[in-house]
Length: 279
Image 1: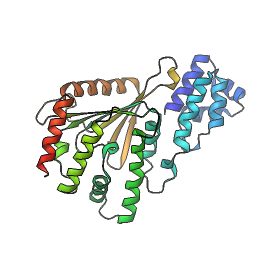
Image 2: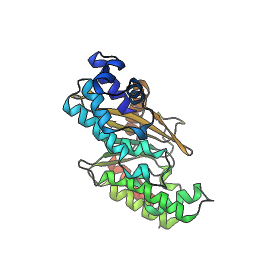
Image 3: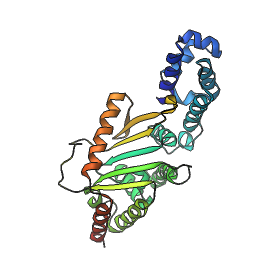
Image 4: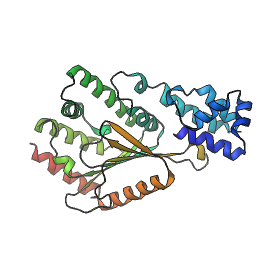
């Protein structure tokens, strides 16, 4: 999605046709069209992306940014891990490139902040007929996403607005919930993580809308390296939106949500109070 949009923007800026770019890059017109149309993501190749970018007159920084994006979706564990649903691959790829991630959580703790026990129970409840070994492998693969908060310099900036009902929606019993809420409190103290609680009963702009994730990377000096995409998590699949008008709508919605939610100190109090209920 982002790679295709960036390649199209470079070609449009250069005022070239796909035929001209193909001739300069030494590839077929079909290849240029396929890359711009974000078709067959798993078949994208760094040398081809570099060649097309060079043919469009991209700067070294623009070309290298595109190459990093291709690498994040081609060489990562998320593409070849047998237990990971294919639909998650774009999400992890976008997270690997994003500078920030904004999450509105309505029912469950977001994946980046889940404990292993909490995640395991979620999968057991969602897939009661799946054997435990497969479920554990799936959970292990999903939890590797959390390394984006600690192992990448600079780390991803995570901002979560969470409905208070998430804290009282028991998953896996009291012990699992105690550990999960303790983990939330610990993670909320990290400098790169903001956690706000939207108190129960408080109206908000999201209305009946569900969980959504907004991933972004802003680069005013190099627009081709910027990114803005919304991920909507559905049952057994996900929907990605990157149309500017749609993304802008979700950005505004998240701004309203964090304005309506409790501030950080109050959110910590709400979290501690919910933790006491499981003691």
